[in-house]
Length: 225
Image (cartoon, rainbow, N blue to C red; front, side, top):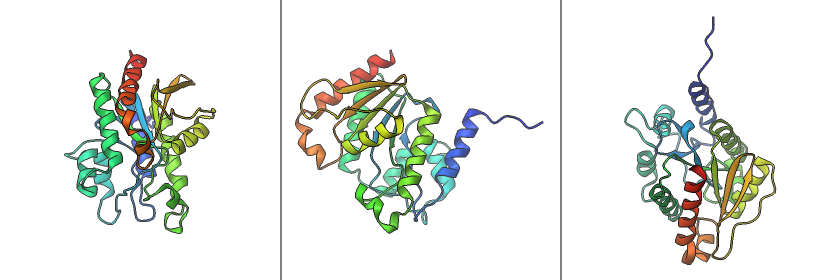
């Protein structure tokens, strides 16, 4: 008799297949401190990563170990090793993660609506990144379907447009001035919509960003209570 694979095993098998090398890089589906990403309650979602993982220098098995924070590997340690100093976007995401933790929210997974790296989103149309958009979007759909977070925080206009297409719902834009973070409920999941955490768009709202991110963290905590 063939045994039925566990949910965890099925998920890891799917991620293993989805993150094989493409265009010389290993797609990065998430950043998290969790050893079981299926336990995430909150997604922080951007458009796509700027800095990729070189498939010629990173072994796929080590990549997987880092994704699941096991065997002496971790998501963040590998990122710091391969990428070096964090980008401005990474520092802003770190700020949001800190505020979430301060609010008692620690089951967080950072991901992108396109889990594939390119210097700019517009570069996805270049021949060097053929198939990247499609593969990266498929990975996000896979992670979203398996994890089913209670809260999804989407930052950036392009991200919000892509999330709207994936969840099949019209979404309003994020705020462009101080106020309560824009939020909607879709199929039992709360979506919180923020301006971009990536420069140059970040520069237009950084003066009121911390208060807005603090309000976001409190909204998330209230939702999970």
